[in-house]
Length: 485
Image (cartoon, rainbow, N blue to C red; front, side, top):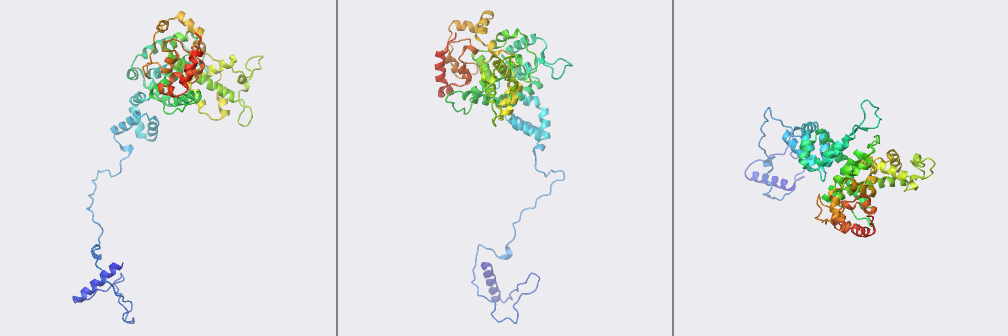
């Protein structure tokens, strides 16, 4: 302000020298604000120091910045900002494809649920997007994923039956036909399976099972397996091959449950009795021996988790007994408690039956934290075993299978064929399997191995994790002690 007043004073003196009368300041209404005559001379007058500031232009030149005028929009021009809803179809397809390629099924679901336009675009491209989703899914075995969907449809309720009626197998030959088709399917590339064999209904079911069950359950199972090593190593990030082995074991275990188990709802008539002795030849002989042990390790984990829940439900958080009152005396004239008799044949049968209900009930249970709710869930799952997986993979049945149905693997074992570890590859044996059998090809699994190594899932881990953990030392110890063949 002082600079402005000094500048005005300087301008007034310059006008006086030039013979001009100074302009009187006004109050904004045009009225002069000159000094009153009654005011003493010199009153209100202050000497000012003339200051010239070349950085500050005169007041009458201070104008707001001028911008070129904006042209008026055309009458048909849309002045609103673009939104997701207004994107062209090509960009909508690109966005959906990017979500699929990044394995972000949750983001895809959220976008499709929130946007009617993207939902319609998804419906138009549904089959293509579902194929791409499965193609980019990490570690998913496509042949097994498709076989899981088809095997789930083998059992059905008779037409016109009660909704609570058990599902039945229409024709026992359907199981054999399925196994033949499954064997041929496993030889095809994944792209061929998706393009030529999978209907849209199959693709929807495959994506749903992967996203809701298999994908979240794989790290849960990995953590539970590693927890059984002493000391338990940190899980960290699972490698691509570890995820592939875990998913392969989970999918094939579920296929076995679809064929020979009680079903997720426990309302299924048992398969024909002759299947109990034929399961090994019908199903397990399709795989390499270490792949059979992947299935068996998943079964052991599920069974043991159910047994752990059964044991810890004796006393609830408030000290009161919870659940399983109907199972405390399961046999007529018996007073044995299932929880206090871990070797009870009836207990083992119930746990096997619960495990062979499949992965959907199991995943519901492991997500539950409340003991009382877990007890209620398990009580609903307990049914006598019908799959007989332990019998199918037991020593006597394997010996009988060799007599009835000799395989190429039996000849390789008899010839002491070397089994070489070529690295963690999809079709090769894991290092733990090679070490356990001392570099020999051995066509045995299940009951042929020490149960303790199966409890920590020895066939799932990469060589780096095996060497760094306690697993290698335990493996070397157990292979020398456990010799049952």
